[in-house]
Image 1 (tube, helix red, strand yellow):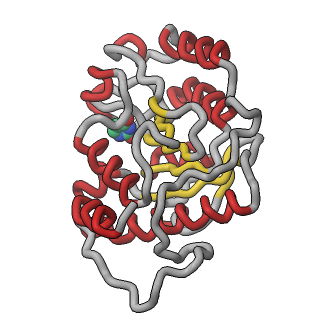
Image 2: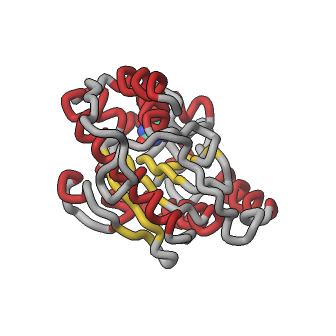
Image 3: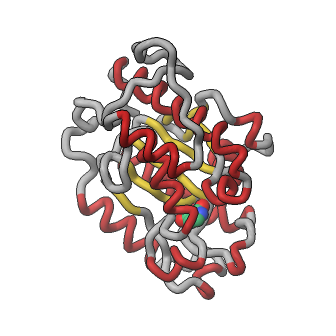
Length: 244
Ligand code: URA
């Protein structure tokens, strides 16, 4: 992405743009301003990604799922969207009203901000990014997910991760982060370091939920720090040839 577009995206995010004093450096963890699309040249672990049948079976299981009472109130389940060979996986909390209606994650106002956040680091929905939620069904009134709902639904996300084998997972928001990491630590304590998820030890970084950032724009700058950190970690992982 060229500098003009990057600046436009940062402005869309509501982030004041600061000029670096020196030319962009090679990336090291947590720093670096180099631009460019965030796709490595590495093929997926097994070349073409997981077989279509595996995805079809998982989609069907989610569509027909009745493991928790949310199936009674949802319009439809919201499976996830994007490139099934993506190197980036964004994980949110649960579908909201708009997502429940349209069957796609992050399509409301928070989704627009998420798209701007992704663009700010050279990513775009559907291009090397997959977007999913911890819960596949909308909790009524957008309440927080209940532990038993998460327990029922998390295996679907775990299977998505197993099929995608992303290089990096970006958990957006406290609910996604705490449930993926099985912790009660506040989001502020989870930011700024690389965690790992699941049996594949998939690297995972935490940032703010875009809906929170809409309510608290002063924290957008911290989210931008998280995104730069994620971008630099991603590049390090790719340089090391790590595809989980
Ligand atoms: N918030 C989420 O966490 N996920 C969505 O899909 C939409 C809003």
